[in-house]
Amino acid sequence: MHRPPSIQWILPILRWAYWHEDMQDPPSIDLQFMDAGLRRKLSPLVKQALSLAHQCANGHSNLRLVYASRNGDIARTTDMLMGLAIGDIPSPTAFSMSVLNAAAGAYSIATADRSPNTAIAATGSSIGFGLLEAWMQFSSNPEQALLFVYADEPPPPIYQAGHPSEASHAIALLLSNNASHEINCIMQAQPDAKESASSQSLAFIQCLANGTSSWEGEGRQWHWSCHARSVENEDE
Image (cartoon, rainbow, N blue to C red):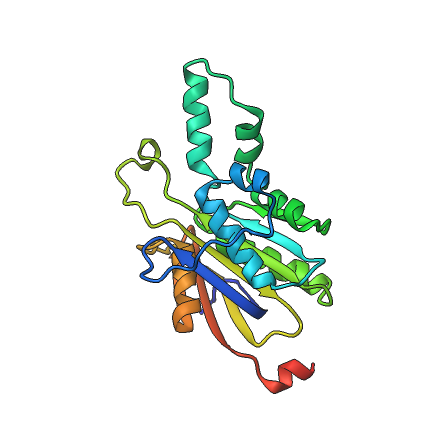
């Protein structure tokens, strides 16, 4: 029996952090590393995401950054588009902070880190392909740690067309050769896949919380498992 094509990779994770707005004990936002003027330009979601990112970086410098999001800063973008519809001209700040790579750029400015950064959006599979991009970049230069950040929020009602919304959430991972854990990632083509009830990114949070999770949708099946890194892997 012919098996659908698949790809498998392993992410070496030194630290991770996550947040969603329904958490009983959410992590506090700490952006003291960032200039106050820059902080004021950020949306609440991006503030939370960059706080998690800095928590994971924990003093590391010279960090490449991969930022992924399905919807981006969609609340800000929607406000800007609604203003355009009635003839308002968007401010330069609103426009510059609405683009997908604005969060990555803000973090780079705040940390004075000129390492490359990449922004990824791939519809419902954005975190999966963002993690794949992070792995490919890290594999090309494993001596340099890499920071992966994901952030998303439900679209405003005008976009939702009756679909249930999910809690805003953010995730940060630090990939490093000195990793204490690793996440085994498998993506397999599944043409008849029925999309899972939750979003892919919330499914991935379940992996971080419980050690394993899966998600189906957009013609693919994804599976993640997280475990402590073995001594043999650390010596390789």
